[in-house]
Length: 248
Image (tube, rainbow, N blue to C red):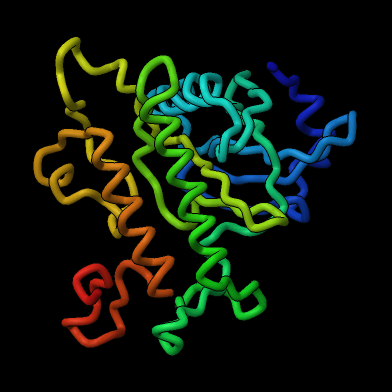
């Protein structure tokens, strides 16, 4: 569905700061309400930094979102591309990202994730296992069940949204790359390195060759994060404990 600017302004009350729910490299995310009462998340690209490169990323996100089914993935509702405005409208998931949820490990009770809010819900091991399985299903779907494999490129805790029942939905396809762009017979995409450094596949960093395995590596870091209740990198710890995967 292609939205009009009037619909977007009405849904967000002219992009009211009170409706702002997130901020990222792409722009600002607002909670909005459509005329039929449906709540949505509205991602508005930064106008001051919009250029040809961001235009390509916007079109990439639209193509990607339009292909996927809502199996542990945020549902795509529509978009707006008009003048300087580039807006993506997706399903609103009422809970905070996993990265804002307080997790306490039963084994490492003192190793509390530093950026998990103290007012968040403490997740037991069973809940974290369910989250891991949901994310695994989402990644498997992207890699296997779309017309062409889709590489997410930015699997991390802040891109995992939790529903009221603590089921996980993967979001933020801003960096997603269709494997259809790979030349016939090739096994990778040669591309500029993007993503979040703490979760990046070291082979991808070294070779610039992106494959589905890069998502699997990031998922592995997420699993360690879920079990240990620590960030992937903790600079305030002793040198041998700062990189969580190596510490584990």
